[in-house]
Image (spheres, rainbow, N blue to C red):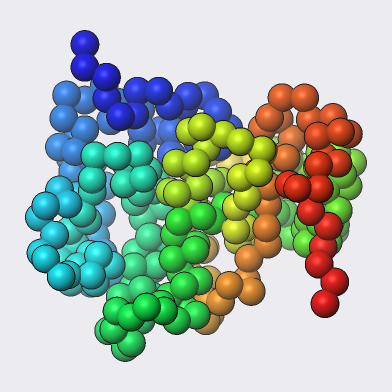
Length: 266
């Protein structure tokens, strides 16, 4: 039996929860890329110019064409047979509105500034989101405010131990960045996400997972469309510190200053 590049992924891990439903439909397929395109057709996926979204081989990307500009102009997403691009495709299936908006932002920056050694701040922020974001969803309540205040202060013991019971009740994290998920295939303690904070009504946490993902997809896409994106918008999150995401999360675990770093003083 041929071993495929995604066969060793442990899909039961919490960090794959967002893309797990999309992945399950691909894993059993004889041709995962053909199945990917079938799902894209069924879901009616399109890019920001309303061109139908399809996944193509890397070899079909014209020489010299910029990746994001090509997706914008054609709706065709070059997808190599590796974990990085596989997770990227899963995110397109899972959070299509956010991906559309990120592609629109990146394509607009390329059109304005061209492809140079430096991406520029807006495109850099969009790329970081695309590659390494985690979506931290919090109830817009005093409890949610206390948790994000602790995380922004790097009060890790407070956020992850004292307030641990909030995760699942008035807080949750969806991994979004495809490079982030690629790293988590072989997890190590220091993996840190760039966290995008999303405040929601408490009733959000009564919805099922499908409805929650759809709500977050639309809400975050609207946020990205309505504000100038900068790297200052992110909060660092050592993801394996999240309650239940790693074994033996005792006091010693969180005292590791190489991972759970104190807030820098300016």
